[in-house]
Length: 555
Image (cartoon, rainbow, N blue to C red; front, top):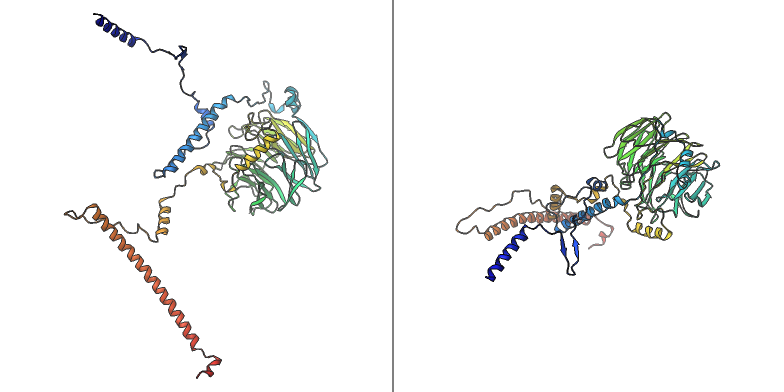
């Protein structure tokens, strides 16, 4: 009876257990209760945020690829996907947002003066608006370092100055006693290049001349490619030259045959150099080819200025026909065209896509010129002299303007990227961090041979076509194995068409084909040897038939 009761109790317990819902808690060995995670797995990421950090399409694995190549492609795709998801997750943690200028009702932002902006913003930002009165050696070219911390000024009459513009500390100031055409920072704020009247000179941050490169003469404009350590120069003699500053060697010298080269810019996306010419064309150049990659007819008159945005998607040009045109470089087609009453002599694009255009002594800033038609500028400012150089400061809402009366630092809200990559360009790095970054950048230097119009091609697998592989095979074997149809052995009865017998007959026929080829080759060789011997005998007979002065002594 007792056993029957125990059995009934166990059945009731099982039924009760089945009816009971699943517990949301579990006990550990010590008896502490731990709640189960109601959201298991990694947190979902919005698709639009993932697409923001997408760099390339997935690589298609070839069907007949080697297993090692297949594993390598899979690992590369997994690493790329993980980096993309991590960047999307960390994007929400970025502390700063891009600012902008917003006016009151019925108020145009272009009518707000720089003095009003400097008074309304905080003290640190207001100190970024200043003027340098340098009327003796102007007009000035301007360049900011990659971190946006240091400013380089080059006056037309030989004045060169390096400034830590945020703290207003003068690093060095020299006069080269020669006209200066352009100035450019190199990979760090420790060195800069000056295009003087005759040759290209390299100076350090203390104003000491390090090099005088006489191969680069009559240089008018310069661009530095930071990830390739290449200094590209355009000269008055129509030469485009590349200098590797890490080893001090000339990488390429290309004669463009297009006359004086005084309009130049680079595409930050793929390191292609864009040159503007007096006939209205813009040409795209790489150090790997002696001819232009692309030639575009952009204006009816000469090209005055060219600039490209950081994504490598849009190019903005201005010409003597007083037009400002926006091009899509991916399709090489014009998107927008604007008419400026006096034309634009200098153009510059910021990290957030603001376009600055200089017309005489007036600097105008436009927003979103490639998506929507623009009827009025976002901001405008008049300087004291004719503008000769424009450059947006990286990671700051500042536009540097070099003109005939010196230099002006303008406040342009929403121009700079608010969040910087501390491993690439850190504005607050110390001297030790700069040295460490320089060593790593040299180790990761990209070779000039990898510069191309489409950088995504570098990650693709080179799939040789059937014709290419067939030609390689013909060259290796010395004959075309597909010239004739393959031999198909006749089926024989009584067990004579076994697998071994069929293979033997195939090899026999193949050996016969090879014997014919070898026989023909041997016959050709014997024929050539025979002809050579006949020529030698004929030559010998001719020599013996000639009489010499010593023949009279023969008996």
